[in-house]
Every structure is written in structure tokens, then in C-alpha cells.
Image (cartoon, rainbow, N blue to C red; front, side, top):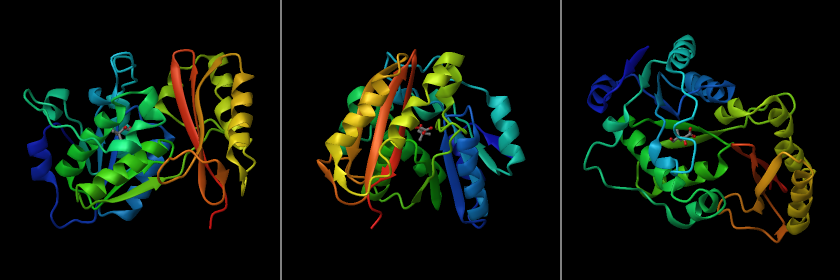
Length: 277
Ligand code: PAF
């Protein structure tokens, strides 16, 4: 496995012939959720690249950029073990050199849900993912369904800017009690970790609904979260899975989404509901 810190060196190392080339973009602090993307990407590609970059542009000044977990040595060891060929681990100056100014804004998709709670977040994500796809030029890039809105934003920018990658969203990996794996779970105390199961409980209360009143589902999810004293509700949503427009009635495929703050940690989760047809 080669660890590369600069864009020029990465470009020179990117194979022309050993394709397909897969990319798993990450911010490090790798857990089994990331590794499920890595193992799928390993199975589907001749060459596999993983990027590790904690992207300051997607954190607002009030957020946890400084305290975001980082453990490069542990990350390199598990990526090597998983058979990764190339790791791109650029510095912030390498990704955003002095004078760099261009930002990518996908518009309305990024202005709802997470976009309301985290202003500017998706411009940061869209900009760095556009840069990573341009640097690596993968045939396929893999992301987690846990960040459902991020997945839609990335699908949109890849299509709109003709970046030519296939975007694959991989299923959420959960602990035995339903908590979705996230690097942020590391910041939970034992009590908070227990309280964090409330996200999955709320989503499960949708009862895998096929059709029905979306407002009632939102109320049920909200009531479950409000019963947990350590949880502060940010939003619940029952939305169209492509546009994230809030639904009045579920008549087909839909997405239930929740965001909750537990202590200093903000957690999100989602579940596909509605008839699959
Ligand atoms: O999901 C993440 O870890 C990040 O948002 C991503 C896609 C690597 C961009 O920084």
C-alpha cells in the first residue's frame, strides 16, 4: 500500500491500465461502516484508492473540526490489511492552497434538513468531493447510506459536472442494538451511548410502513425521541428519497430521517420506508 500526500504524486501513481479504479473517500477514524465500503470496493475493482482528509470546509466554526477523531496510524494499518493499493492523505494546504477560491454548490437539495442545521456544510462536502473525484478519476466511488442527503448531493454534482464516476451508496452498518456506526459515536459517554439507541428506535417505529399519513409517522418519531432525557431533537423527516421534499402522504418509496444531539455529539440516521415499487 502506498500512502501519498500530494495531488501531483497521486496523479503520477494512478494506473492507466489496472482498471477499474475504485475510490472510497473518508475523513479517517475508520470503523466497520467504512470497512464495508472498502471491502465492497476491493471486490469490484482492480485498483483501490482510499482518501483520508478531515475537510475543514464542511465544518462550521461552531462544529467539532478540532476534536474530530484522528488516528492515521491505526487507519493505515487496517487499510493495508484490507488490501488497499493507494491512500491519498493530503494536507489542508495541499487541498486548499493559498488563493483557492472555487466552491461547488448543488442548490436546493443542500438547503434542507442537514443544510438548515449545518449552513455551508454541503458546499464544503460538494467542493471536496468534486476535487477528490477530479484528482483520482475513479470508475466508481463508494459512500455510506447513513449520510443519505450527502449521497444525493454527490450523485447530483457528479451528474451535473460530468465527472463520469459511478456513485455507489452502501447500506448502513449497525451495532447489535441498532445504533448506526459513525466516527462521532466515539465521543459518547456510556450513558449517552445508551441514549443514542433512540434514533434507531424512532426510525423502527415507522413500522416499515407501506402507505399512510406521513405527519403521523413524524409525530410518532418525535414523541419517541422526546421521551429520552439525554436527547435533544434536531429534526424528523419523512421525505421523497430523491428530492428530500417533505411528504404529506406516503404512497411509494420514502425515506425517514432523524437528527439528534446527545450531549456534545450530533447524530443522524435514516431508514427506507414505503412500498418499494
Ligand atoms: O462522509 C464523509 O466522511 C465525508 O463527508 C466525505 C464524503 C469524505 C467528504 O469529506
